[in-house]
Amino acid sequence: MNLAAPWPGAATAPDGCAMAAEQIHSAAMDIPGADDETLMQAYGAGNLAAFETLYQRHRAGLYRYLLRSTRNPHLADDLFQETWSRVIDARARWQPHAKFTTWLLQIAHNLAIDAYRRQPSQAGPQETEAALATLAAAEHEQPEQQLSDFQTRRRLQRAIERLPDEQRHAILLRLEHDLSLEEIADITGAPRETVKSRLRYATQRIREELRA
Amino acid sequence: MTAHPRPPYDEDDDLDLRALYRTLPRTEPGPALDAAIHGAAARALAADRRVQRQHRLWHPGWGVAASIVLTACLFLLTDFQDPDVAGLADAPPVNAELARPPQTVPRPAPPAPSEGGAALRRYAPAPQAERAAPMAPAPAQQFSVQPPAPSSADQAAAEPEAAAPDDATQARIDHILELLQAGQRDEALRALQDLKNDDPDVALPPELQDLPAPE
Image (cartoon, rainbow over all chains, first blue to last red; front, side, top):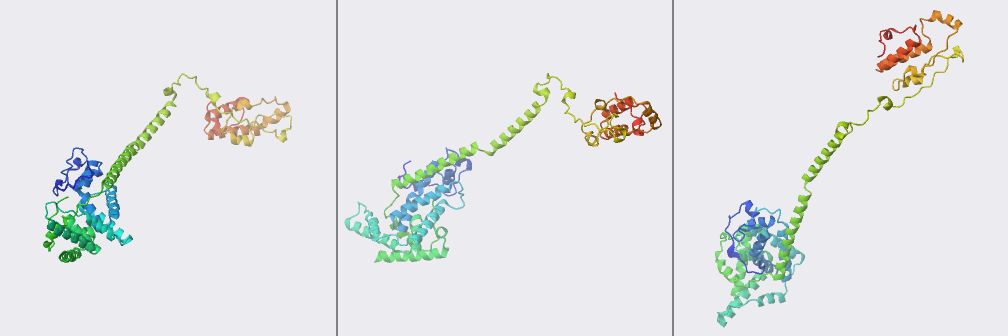
């Protein structure tokens, strides 16, 4: 399997499509159609292809969440690898008490919080500029439109980076993963109303930044 | 990724922000990072398989089976100790007499001072030998010494005392009684017969008078 393949989110099975236990241990299980929880259990039972599918589904979104949370590519790489190491270590004892996505992002969030506590200053101006330099404009856009969109995206990225840590985590979980308030509360460990307040403040600041 | 229900977030006007966010670069982890994680996942499964193989090799059931086999072997070896099973039935029969442990030979009792050194008395076990007698009985005949013919004077002196046994005779009677108490009836009967042969007129206690002759 090509590990650098694009994010195959469209191949995700709908919720509640849990496979029988015997199918988890079967080499003929429908890996592309299986849900995340079934794939994780299949990997725990020794199915490496199940892990590869699971990894392909979540690698890009998780990496962007960590990169934009930490604003440090090197730290994001470390946390990304550590997050998946935790997943690998938990393969045998993992039980689908919660959604795999929630559990995965919870690991990444906790690792990022720990990293903040150890190293409060995460990113310098050079790294931010380097990240912004990757912004590419669509070829079909007119030069004026390209410049306007580029500036808008740049403002959005800067606005996200300038948010306080708690608001940035919340808005990234919302924008990157389309999570609900309850899911964000589960991942961050904050009450639902607190998450709602953080999202409101974050949205307001981003809008102000975009209008500036 | 798994589809999520629309969050009950009351600011649905962030739809435009989400659309704008999706225009940001779709940054992804590098191939080296992918390879490292893939390798870690594969190594973990390989380690699991090794552990499972070791568990299969060293399953507790093997220990139980080995214990059962060992116990069965011990039982079989125990059965082979039986001559019929071990093929030893053709061996010559064991002479019970020769196989008997060597018996303690008690020292003869010293002559009674009253009778003088020249007088030879019937064998009378010493007190120490009497204590060992139940454990190692010896035929009285083996250790008996034929008494000399009594002189006429002695015989005359002994006549009135024929009913009362002398010390040596009484010791032999006591020895026979001890053999009976020890359950060695055959030995006791032989010793009694020897006593009767040596002294037909011996006065026996009531418990010895009714004993039959040895077979």
